[in-house]
Image 1 (cartoon, rainbow, N blue to C red):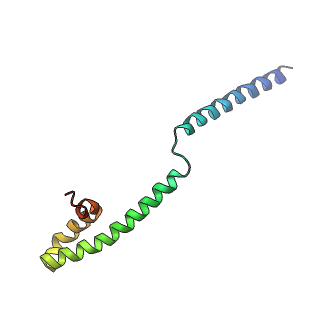
Image 2 (cartoon, one colour; image 1 turned 90 degrees about the vertical axis):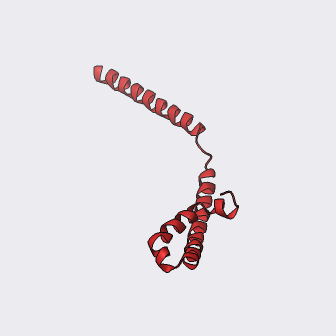
Image 3 (cartoon, rainbow, N blue to C red; image 1 turned 180 degrees about the vertical axis):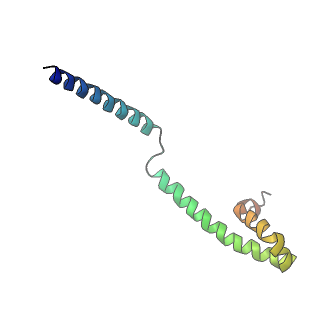
Length: 95
């Protein structure tokens, strides 16, 4: 009899624990980003990454053309690559 009573007690404790976890997950999901938003943010990130690659080529070529190959080899690659990361600031004359 004690074993049956003990197993019922364990089952009720386990059920209470599972219900508690489910409630925490539901409360956490209520504040999460909607399921489609991560896909939109990923698409924006991919498009921005591709644009950074294109502008990196452009700014590297532009730096080598204006300052010379040796200057580009020493500093230009770093400067042009950084400029490519923040290309909207340069293209829209914010900086």
